[in-house]
Image (tube, rainbow, N blue to C red; front, side, top):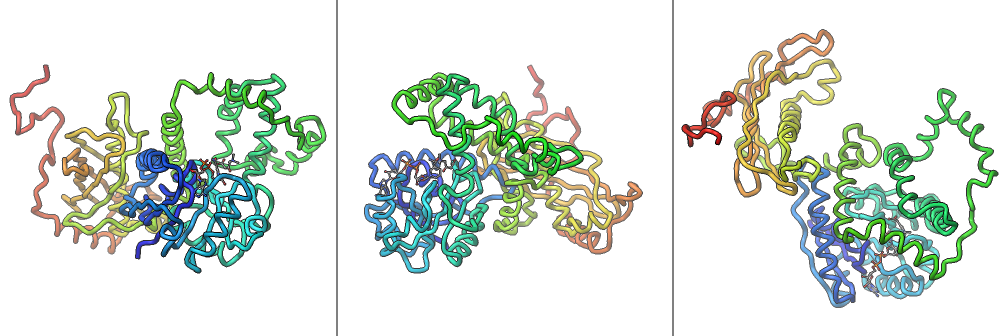
Length: 482
Ligand SMILES: NC(=O)C1=CN([C@@H]2O[C@H](COP(=O)(O)OP(=O)(O)OC[C@H]3O[C@@H](n4cnc5c(N)ncnc54)[C@H](O)[C@@H]3O)[C@@H](O)[C@H]2O)C=CC1
Ligand SMILES: C[N+](C)(C)CC(=O)CC(=O)[O-]
């Protein structure tokens, strides 16, 4: 059964929520009185379609149905999740959450995106919302801070994991939850630094992104500082830097006066720093960078990388076909190069992932490798047949040409969504004993599975198999490069 989310307020954050749910197969109903809302959310969705699928090596479920509503009642009807993302004023939150409590199905989770209000404040006039606080861009960053009634938070947690989020339930309600407490401290100190003429907005951004910003995505604060204590660890770090807390390293809770002068100072520096790009261009740059970093974190399963891998494992498996489908994915922008198409090295990476998938399918999974056996690649041959671009959907099927004894000879076909064959990659692998590093026959179950595939694929055509580099194509045997 398709789930439904109602998005109430479709600005920066509501648009991101809409994309997160829609691209994970949920139906999404939107209510926002802004006449520009449909255009703005359309642009956010375009960016999200470009970025989110690129995190995964498997296809996301088909998109849900998107609908626009002029009234709250029809938007929230039959919703499993209602997300309020109206501007951050308590009176408006009270009004909207009160209406949602009355109109939404009794079992629907009602989440508020509020950056700082506590559930006791939001529900002071009888509403039944929990805080479900996301991070921009909501469709890429997994963290959602949950605060409020325990059973509702538990239900919310389960639903959020289905759409690839990382729910973090707070032990107690507090103004601005966990992450915004931290961000506010950095934001407050940064405003002081600009106001006092110590640094420009650009210099502060460099201080973050050239240094500690890179560390935070993978180890956070405490693990990072534990390492910074050297071999003596956290205790040494605390004794060395603890006294700094009472030195004038921070302005603490002292807030600069938030007047027009400060706003103009920050805004004009920000314009000269980044005004050469539109907000949508900046969003795409940000998304490409985040996708690249998250894909790097996937390799070690660290931080948000582990969340994506776990979500991917729960995605529906590709439909069975004559030949096994070993990849069905979108091409990330980071795979493209200065020629504006998928870089040659990435074809091999995609084929390598497909080989790994096939090896798992025949039973040589993580436990098999941990027990001491695996396959090593000894030869590959790639034919580049059609261009592939960022955002293209790529499907790989794998044919077993030979699967007997130590040898496994595979033929991958990469096809674009329009049916065009983009590449073939032929791979020869040998089965090895990981202890002696010498070749040996696979275990009986793996050998049996492999030979079953080999028997089923025997006799199927494999156009281009065994071609050598420089061989003329049959279609144009006379063609020579100019
Ligand atoms: N912008 C950010 O970085 C983040 C914002 N938040 C929170 O998300 C919420 C929304 O913030 P943004 O999306 O940034 O604001 P926004 O100003 O971009 O969007 C608010 C949207 O609500 C709509 N709206 C106004 N009154 C409404 C009503 N009565 N019913 C339905 N829609 C209505 C507006 O037309 C607008 O499209 C706030 O509570 C904010 O604290 C949370 C995380 C990050
Ligand atoms: C600035 N902000 C308080 C609205 C930020 C957030 O709430 C979270 C984010 O995305 O940084």
